[in-house]
View 1 (cartoon, helix red, strand yellow):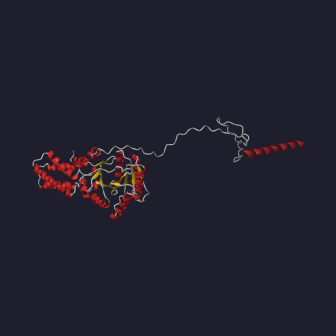
View 2 (cartoon, helix red, strand yellow; view 1 turned 180 degrees about the vertical axis):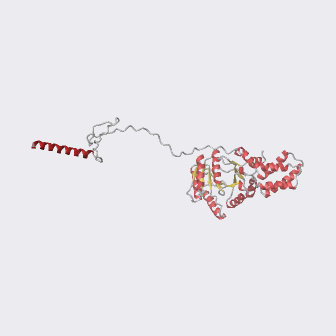
View 3 (tube, helix red, strand yellow; view 1 turned 120 degrees about the vertical axis):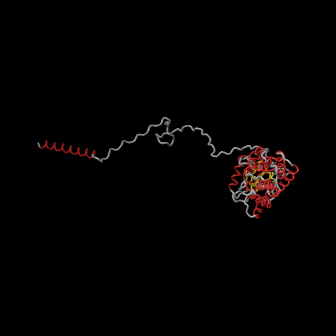
Length: 393
């Protein structure tokens, strides 16, 4: 009996121990069984096992990379501008005459109307004189014109519209002076290029005129080098660089605030090295003291002449500034020997008489006129085309 009880006690103890273990395993918050160890991923189809090379561990795999695909060459981030082929300068003013007529014909129509009146008394002549002076013809040229017109009208007596037109055309042409030599001197001197110095106040269109002139000369078949000697304005050098890039003209630049004469010298030297026909030098347009301006431009000219001859000194004037432009012109004329005038924005003013007054005051011809904002709107000045535009013909 005692042995039977002992067996029962042992069985009960074993059952209690087993129940306690299960309780500890499955109670809330208990730790889950650890996950099975990860299995190695299957090899991709492209990878092949090869016998290990010397020094490699047994079982190591070697991956054969796919063959390299040819790559297309990368395109440049900034493309160089395409070089343009400008049209020749011949006939430009004829093509642009309609623009000139839009701004100038009001002067011609007014004068023709006054001169066509049956009775030309002092009041009418005073009005004719006022219209001419308002158009910036200048006092002295205006008086000369009016006196000559009065004499011719008395001789004619009665006047037809055709006679009045012919009379006025004759007098305007006399004042514009078609006999002045308007040739732009840009011919090479043997091994040396011609040199054009462009001067004028900032804001008159000086740098733009330099670029347009280069374009015009290249259109005429000449090789051009540009000198950005306006070193006091970084924008001027950048602007000239853009003009040069468009037509394939080399541009010589210097550091901002550097010596303008040094840039002019380097540009002339580059022109000789590259056998250019023309070197065009854009100068600084600061109108400070006359002495400072004289020193600066004088030095530029002297330095250029160590290498070549300065064939043209072009003064750029803004036609819309009227008599203010005349005062600027007089200062530059006292500082440097001007050979010609480039009159910009002539299509933007009704005061075309500045052509007459500036020539009379400075004693040099208007050689170039700007008649618009386009790259080919700089034209050699033609007196007859100009007068016909004033008369609305």
